[in-house]
Length: 628
Ligand code: F6R
Image (cartoon, rainbow, N blue to C red; front, side, top):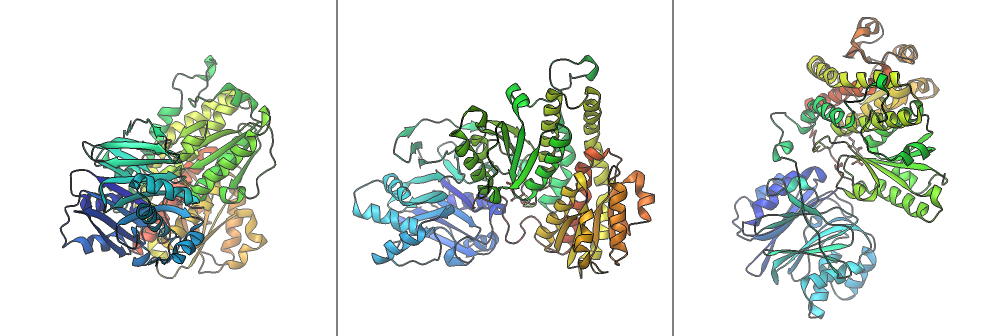
């Protein structure tokens, strides 16, 4: 959600903080600020709006401070105004704090502090923290670390914080309770950031704090303690990412770059997870899929429940289709935010899957934690089996789950998920095929056929990008002025693609869009249609093709402008129904969602880009949603 960065070392901190925040801006972008300490004086600069406003403010100042913290905000408590921007300070301007998360009991703490005469200068939950730290420092003879530790015991909620103090110029304190924060290790310099993307230009040696851990960073090194004060011995790991991955590489936006990266993402995913030595006719004893799941999981899973949010929820709906149709396992998909408060009855032999590209989505994590807690109390057949499908195996979900499918899509910077969606969907193909193989719900010949089809997907995505990108850009011009609503329809395995097309469009173009199972239109939504409402139909050849075409005809009869996504083989025939046809190469229905989503990603991208909108950082959204 919000982005935190901190630095202590021998270089000037300001530029490191600002460029770190630039790399984190996708996490939140309604205001930003930094605080530094130099010669016993704390300096704090903040600006409302995007980060360049802060950069502009700092342009004519020289600051040699070698310690500092910075923050880019996504407002939770208090409007996005400068006085609510972080860092927040105590009344004496001695302590500065940045926070990501929510302090749930801030009202009580605020009342307590107000009754002691403390005046608040913001409406945020965060401001209680510097005031509390300051009180502990003033009233008892303790270190900064101890004062932060004491403060933390007063806080309820999920948060990560970084703290500096004018009176402790060689210490940066960092703490984590349910919200992610990672430390970076350089030569005589140390960093913290809420995402490793901010650390990449400086170091590849990183260590993610665990829950209830607090770290003291000095120019000499890093000490880590539990909140209870016990020293912890942990070692950094080495990131194998390169800074180029977080550059635009000539594309106008990260989203477009990430759409174009999809063939490569699929290729390397297939290389990782498909076993090249598997041949159906030899019928060897090993799976065609390298997921490393236990035989217990293969054999004893009677029921699967999936929790996710947003685009990951759409990927999960495709997952449900695959798990039920290929592996024959009853599967449910819930919004994580709903599941938490109305969980399914506890069923034995259940696999619970959390799907999240960031690995940090608070609702998804909380739903899994709840599931783990309630099952752990029961006997063995109810014990939690938690599987994460994530792009960040080192994240909170990675630490929580006993099985992980790493989607390996590389860093995704655009707030609208594209390549991570495709990679999640692939994760479900692997899981469904692996289970189907071990449970013998599919013949080896059918498995081979599906795997052969998967091998064609990277080339087919490439072809789709080559043939459709420009054509879709042309088409997009027609919807940038007066179009206020879009309807997307699809059926079967492609209904989730209609949902995904609608979500992509609304989140980046701000055009209202809804998706329906095509057959449901006539039960109500068809009343919305007239010549001003374009309808996009995902009409991939297969079992429901004719039905989708009929549903599209019903829309056409209400004067709707019809756009069809279909296979190139069908283009001529589809042209008799649709006003515009967006094509993908021929593909069997089971694999068609992976291709059908590409034209929809391009359509939403081009509409938003032509409208001149901030495609990579759409209003009100954040890449990593770490508040519930
Ligand atoms: C849409 C989008 C969001 C995320 C959702 C879940 O493009 O990016 O809807 O899919 O916030 O995020 P993760 O996958 O990180 O749990």
